Length: 392
Ligand SMILES: Cc1cc2nc3c(=O)[nH]c(=O)nc-3n(C[C@H](O)[C@H](O)[C@H](O)COP(=O)(O)OP(=O)(O)OC[C@H]3O[C@@H](n4cnc5c(N)ncnc54)[C@H](O)[C@@H]3O)c2cc1C
Image (cartoon, rainbow, N blue to C red; front, side, top):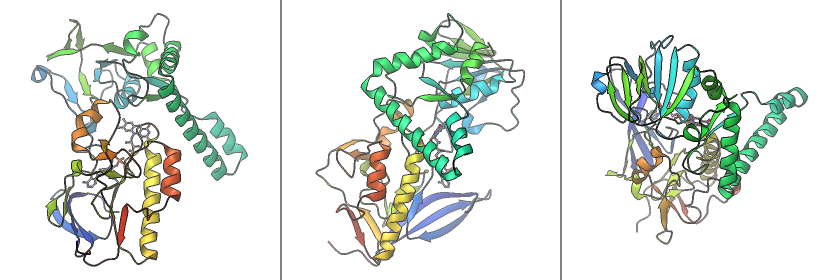
């Protein structure tokens, strides 16, 4: 593992059946090259260099501190300050209760609400099982329970959106003081799981709002001014610190410039194979998790699949694995999700296909079967030994 190395470029040579990876190292930006047979990208799903940052009129007039969570200044002291957090996603709902512990006042300013669900920070069943079973058994059972519950609620939300919506909003109402305007601040316009549902541990967000240490304001920003923000409703939100928790820029491949035999590879023109490789791109596996379950479940499956593939290549004296595009398979958008960060990036993402093995099922059990136990040599993944590729 090498820290402080940023991958800039990766070149595939068919003749050598190898990737050459160009890296920038350290503060001086020294360039280095590595070469490898196989590339596995675990570069996350958003641009690390910068987040999504809309601009508003009057920002230059603001006399306080403006912060994006992706570039949080280590020395920022929010104790005793008035803080406005713009946004209603996972970042905002995570930050607000934490900031509210010492800030004078925290305001979560959103254009529209998100589904927010409380889960216990400590899992009572897990604690009980750990006391009574060997650790690995307890872990496996709890993991299974969490996966099954997650899948059950997702399916229920898709099949009975009205009931699930009423239930989720009802649960929020029970955690806030009587008369709180749940309809305005915690009732989204979209159906549950059209966008990711936010989970808050032990209802910390609702506790912060209920105690008055935090407030939710649903409004539009008209402009910044010296003291804070002027809203479309005419209300003024005074602030010492404004946090723009306005989201991220989806970025599948770590801003690495990929070339295949000298030609720039445009991934928006490729089809994703099993949600982890690309049509026509040899020996490249990327990691992209679930949008409807724990992200890391698919990350685990991807690593398992890669290990199986490497073992298979080794056992059969093969070196190159390339998904072969199938023109008969109709392309579909990579993600079926209405979140802003997804919609903003859809045209840069690869496509998925309408049928196996090009389709992204977003279903852990199905993926578990196909990725752990399905055939590697499935007729779509072309496998060949090292050396120059066959002609034609
Ligand atoms: C606010 C928020 C809440 C979330 N909550 C959950 C949750 O509850 N459950 C869940 O499962 N997931 C959640 N996620 C998703 C979470 O980000 C992922 O589950 C997890 O971080 C993915 O791990 P990863 O290792 O794939 O990617 P990351 O954690 O994103 O790591 C990617 C790494 O690659 C490095 N990198 C990128 N490009 C390059 C390059 N060119 N060269 C070198 N290094 C590079 C980055 O510096 C980084 O270290 C949340 C995300 C956010 C933003």
